[in-house]
Image (tube, rainbow, N blue to C red; front, side, top):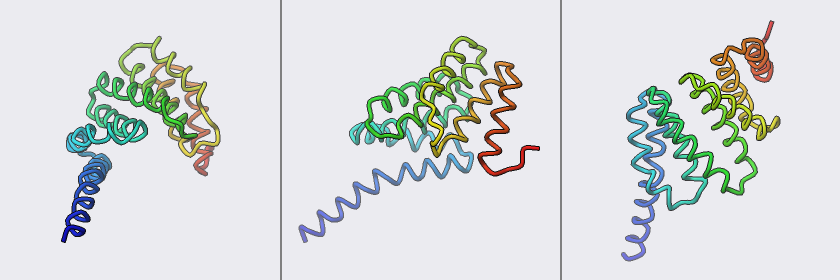
Length: 172
């Protein structure tokens, strides 16, 4: 009986740990950003004790929710925290998420009309960009959005064509 109780406790802990994250992801993909945000915020305290990578991912997800809800300052703040946490991680692909966070932040700053910060984040994103990354199309797309807001239309168009070519789509 004691073994069964221990097993059920482990199952309960895992369900409490993973279920809200999947629930948040489900609602994020469905466009229910407020529900996704609530789910991610519920598990954020748990993820703080799970290591820097887990906390960085959840901050990134919360930043996405705020971005889609139009709360750009909140979004930028969460992408900043995510970026700082990723910098403390030892994973090789951490630079992908740092670059993606910088690229999205650049776009958000450009939307807010803060050209100087937008350009700074684009520059940071250039330093960490890995061309063999699985997130390369996402990074280049966000970079193109930022350049579009900054009215650098030629480079934005070039990046869009590059993303299409990377995806195997016709660019003509």
